[in-house]
Image 1 (cartoon, each protein chain N blue to C red):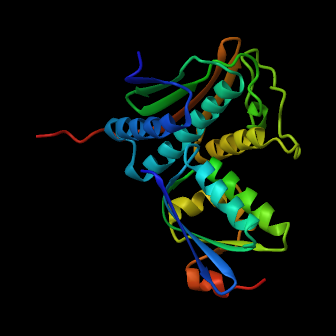
Image 2: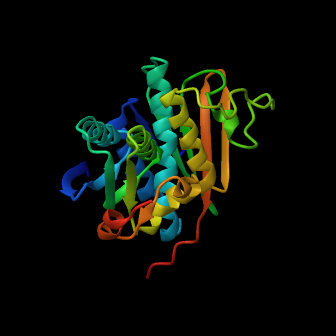
Image 3: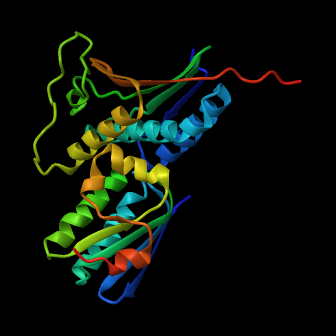
Amino acid sequence: MATVELRFSALPEHVRTARLVAAAVARRAGVDEAVLDEVRLAVGEACTRAVGLHRTNNITAPVRVALVEDEKKFSIEVGDEVPGSPAGAGAVPGVRGLDGEPLPGGPVSDNGDAAESDDEMGLAVISGLVDDVEVTSGETGGIIRMSWPTTPAPVLP
Amino acid sequence: MDLSLSTRTVGDRTVVEVGGEIDVYTAPKLREQLVELVNDGSYHLVVDMERVDFLDSTGLGVLVGGLKRVRAHEGSLRLVCNQERILKIFRITGLTKVFPIHTSVDEAVAATD
């Protein structure tokens, strides 16, 4: 089970809450202070994308964020409940569907669709920020998995 | 923290001072402000981001949208930013090539192409 799990209604105002919680748990898990800004930004981008997908597809289910503390790494999973290939997921190099096939919807030329280009920009920021990132998509929805190394917490007296 | 916006005119430039967090929730307010300025005939904008604590891709999208609008009137949109964590986002996305980024409002106001 996740160290901390968060579910929130797909509303823009809750994305900030997810950022704050993720940063707090990451700090506790021993993620380097210098990297916390990146964690905050990456989880915000992933949640923004999930909120957008839920809203454009009229999905009332909440967005799910799992924050998992392991011995040597801290992982974040942001899950949406939009089935099929998320638009733009193919834009991230190396991103595959669960069946291992490259996803359709790679970089799209300027089609004037603001929502879609925002989505691509979000993924571009995530892939630029996080070394260990995986975007998958299945019948029940998509998941963005990201992880950061942790340093062991100092032993308190 | 919410978004704070204030505008002032310096010569033929309009300086928009932004503070707080620009994200999916607050970015629409910044978009409205930029659209309103352009609709009112302000085509040379300087966006001062020195008091911005957080910026995500939604915010970048709004700034790019603002740039598109002023360019339609042969205007300009310059940014003022010295914060490394904000500048990093422009670098990752390649937008440092798109926006002139200045170290002070004075410098941005004095700049010409």
